[in-house]
Length: 291
Image (cartoon, rainbow, N blue to C red; front, side, top):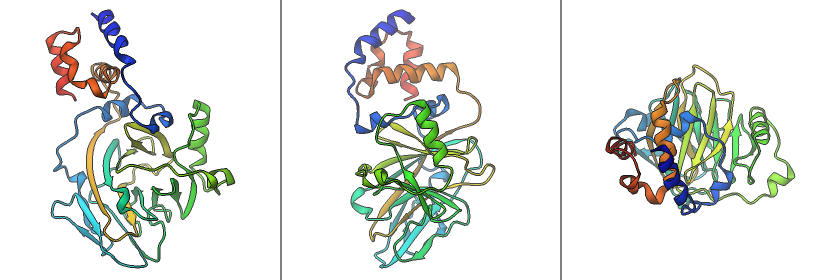
């Protein structure tokens, strides 16, 4: 059965074209993250999907569902908001939906500690603007912490394992952008971005168009509650938050890893063809129920 399944999948692998330009920037994905990204999302009413009404700039208006915030048209002000509930351990994935048409300059998403400043005069990067937060500025692709840019994220070429490690090391200390980095054209970041926080490993990364772009920052503080956060200077900016899923330190089960491998081999266009796989009905049902 295993051989016939492998042949079936191999014959169809060439039918799956790359989903976007971000595929060439994809980094190696851990088994925990792979399974988490391929697991069904939790219910939308999960409290980790709520923006905080108490920890936001007064220029952000919170929706009744707490899933969306809208920035008021206030001039010369930088405004932020963080999630209502943070995490201290585990691997966690949130979805942030923010239309490129409603970003403007200084549009930042990332994570913060509990007491990150959430309002400042003028136009500036707020999340990542001090030692209490870490942020990815979407228009310029620069990653910020401690009030300085630590470099571009992601890199614009396929990286070897060694280069990836060097990128991670460089993002743990303050540095000045090189002339080459300054001259690079920023990548247009689409509306939907997944924020990936591994509180156990102390790392932050992002997923765009289904591709994990690698670690943006490592050596985050351990055992400290960290919250998804955004900051904006554009009036009318609407930003939605949803907690998708998470995982503990425990390694994923062999069954879940096999399910992910099969679904990846099928490709996004053929996820509804599991009934054609040479598998027993029980396994076909498992693949369908775990999508």
